[in-house]
Amino acid sequence: MSTATLDKVEAESAASPYITVTFRIRRFNPEVSDEAMWQDFEVEIDPKERVLDGLHKIKWELDGTLTFRRSCAHGICGSDAMRINGKNRLACKTLIKDINPAKPITVEPIKGLTVLKDLVVDMEPFFQAYRDVMPFLITKGNEPTRERLQSAEDRERFDDTTKCILCAACTSSCPVFWNDGQYFGPAAIVNAHRFIFDSRDEAGEQRLEILNDKDGVWRCRTTFNCTDACPRGIEVTKAIQEVKRALITRRF
Ligand code: SF4
Ligand code: F3S
Ligand code: FES
Image (cartoon, rainbow, N blue to C red):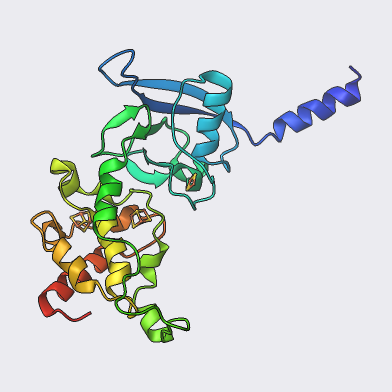
């Protein structure tokens, strides 16, 4: 190689954005052991990349058995919520540079749901609570002959809770949910809120009664973990408080 070429390679190498990051991942494979264990992987990565990119490198280049969910990779589908450095986040929305890559980055499954393998949990109890609050528009009487109109002010009433992507970061960060998993959880309440406060919907009373259950809204202890965890910035605790208030006043 000529001196000029060597200089060019060295200059490119010096300018390389890549650093070595340790990913410390909670592994669990029920076919191998009943116990979960931590496993470290060293990954060359640009700190401007995301935790999801690091997980992809591990799966594609180091250990194809690493199991996790992801789909859109852009914060839309809600499938890659996980506990990163002890906090619930979406792996596809978490930049390496924002979470101190000088130390090992810990990655664990979200809490409160049964781990099936590695970072994959059983989401069924979460989605059952979602289904229980009837997350769809319910109206009575004949089908209208034109679209149902709604004022901008009425639409604004539930705008925040329309942003939910059902990632479960909120519910799986709630200590009440960790306790016994029976609590409906903040995500189900957020999705009930979205319809209870929709002026076109006519099943608000029914949804309120569902959430008046012993495992409903009254179990919320206003811990705010859910609001802190929500990757969509939804004011989850505020929505829960509004549902509680509607239960007391019957005005919504
Ligand atoms: Fe995820 Fe936020 Fe919806 Fe909870 S409220 S499921 S954290 S998007
Ligand atoms: Fe849990 Fe959120 Fe209430 S973390 S206790 S649902 S404020
Ligand atoms: Fe879809 Fe992260 S992969 S939200």
